[in-house]
Length: 363
Length: 227
Image (cartoon, rainbow over all chains, first blue to last red; front, side, top):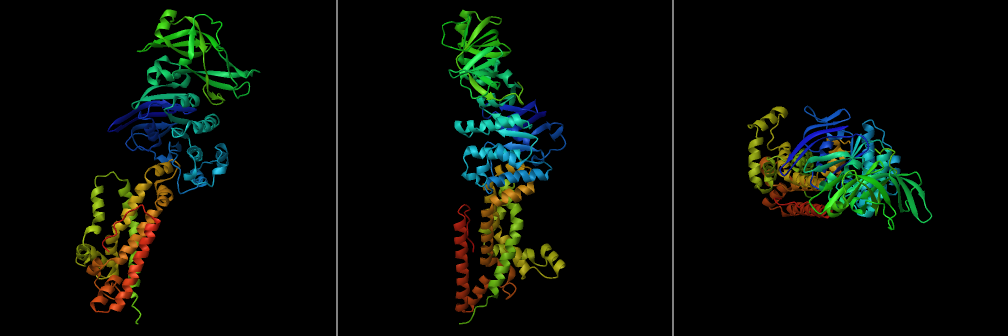
């Protein structure tokens, strides 16, 4: 458990954060830029001297009323947005810097494993300024792991990368989450990153906690529309690969039925996490016939949330999971949609948020 | 042609060597503090550090002469401890040179530390490096060019000083007669050949040093006035 009760005042901004983060899995701290996410990480690390309050991790008091543990004695690995590799050392030198000091502190960092895990073999002799942004972040992640940390803090490690490089690094972070036992606090303003990586999530707004809880729960809450933005709304749904069909489709089993997706590169039995955007779901009171859509799931409406505009967000129970649909208020009224009504959800598109979930996740 | 007397040159080199070593030891923490502090005293300390750049050497030399004399607290302590006076001695010259060349150590170092910034130090802290470790294994290597500039400029500036040395040290051959004063005396006594030789040595030395500094480092503009 990472228990935080902190306050930090700046002339134009106040961080007032009181919340306990789970000390396992990956916790995403999500919010718009300037909401204090990065400052929160810096306070946890002990890099903000003006912070008051308490920071406790697994029974160790890092900051409290009496004494404050200096940053270098907290056993925290920190991946900065801008990597911050040491320019006077090679990649290997940067990694050795971390490993040597971890050994002095009594830990046993495994250099060979970190190098292999982040594919750094070919980069070891390079200077940081000759690396691409993605390569730099991989080195920074390996370097943070080699401190043998008790807690890993990642401050938007992918924010400075283009989509291709992001996609290339994401699997490394997923593996870290699933195979390392270190809890990770991951700051991001990108919901697709959060949906893909996080088990738990804290939403921040203007220096404060807006909502916190398991990711699947928060993302399928219609009440989050204002905070997240209607276009970003979408539920997460666990699925499992059932089989691959000859016509190029992969059949996935979800708790409320089956879904068919274009070929998914995963063996039958693999667990997936799907993200179904609310605006990609159409509702029908009767089971539709003569429709080109393949993916139709029966469910029961549990909530209808009206916003200020012409749209509403409908939450359905589909099997054991929740699904969100964004439709117009006019349709909702004409169809008589309200909690308890049975209807069919026609899913136009599905994205795979995450593969290989379950080894360490909360599903 | 007579060989020039090289004793003043050797004395100058010895003085500059001592002054540079002491300046690095004293100037590093001062420059570090100036680069990282948010104290309101910073501009005052910066101004004091830069005073030798603008004060006439005679003014600095006069105050030093007063401060180092055996009748002053500092000079008195020195005499009680060593049995010698600080004024008109080599030790007094070292003290004076340290003060006189202070900005030439502190300014390049401060600028180098500011260029390094906090980011790599924070990164090092998160890699379990203690504050001293961070300074030695991250800040210092990253500020290496600042150190080179500081060493070269402090050394060269001490070699070239005249006014302060004359005020504090006088003109005692073998003890306080450094090269610049020796040249002055050669000219006064119309011994132009010796003056020419020593001046040429100083001119070439200064030029080579400055070319070296500017070639290795264009990032720290230094006002090399007051030679």
